[in-house]
Length: 221
Image 1 (cartoon, rainbow, N blue to C red):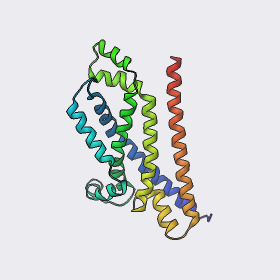
Image 2 (tube, helix red, strand yellow):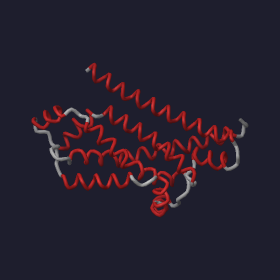
Image 3 (cartoon, helix red, strand yellow):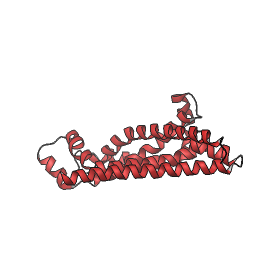
Image 4 (tube, rainbow, N blue to C red):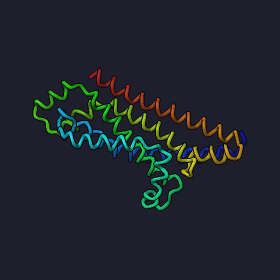
C-alpha cells in the first residue's frame, strides 16, 4: 500500500466515526421514546391507547420500508434546510438519523416486550404511574437488550455511511468509491473495506461486552 493512502484512510475514518456517532445519538434520542410509546400504549399495558399504538406502528413500518438511498435523495431539501448543504459528512447525518430512528424504535420495542410481565404487574399493584413504570421498571429491566439494540443500530449505520459516501456523504464509503473504485486503486478500496469491517467488529464486541457485564452484575445482585 502506498504511503499516501494512510492519511486519506485516517481522515475518512474520522469522518465515518463523526457521521455514525452523531446519527446514533440522534436516532437514539428520537427512537427510544418512540419505542417506549409503542409499547406502553399497547392493549393491556400501562397506558393502553390502541388507536395511537396502531398509528405509530404504521408510521414506523412505512419509514422502515423506504430504501436508504431513496430516502437520502428524497430528504435533500430537508437536509439543505437543516445543514445548509446536501453534500458532506454533516449533511449525511440527517438522512441517516431519519432512516435509523424507526429501526431503533423497533429494537427498543423488542427489548421492552421481553421484560417479565410479573415485574410489570408487581409495579402496577404498588400504584406505579406510567412514567414511574418506564423510568424505574421497563428501562432498567430492559437495559441489556437496549444496549444490544443500539449496537445493532450502530452496525446498520456503518452500512448506511458507506451508501451515503457513494453520493457525496464523505467517510470511508466515499473514499472507497471515488478514490478506490472509480480510479482503480485497489489498495484504497481494500483499505476502506478492511477498516469498515474492523469498525463493525469493534462495535459488536463492545456492545456484547457491555450487555454481558450488565447481566453479570444483575445476577450477582
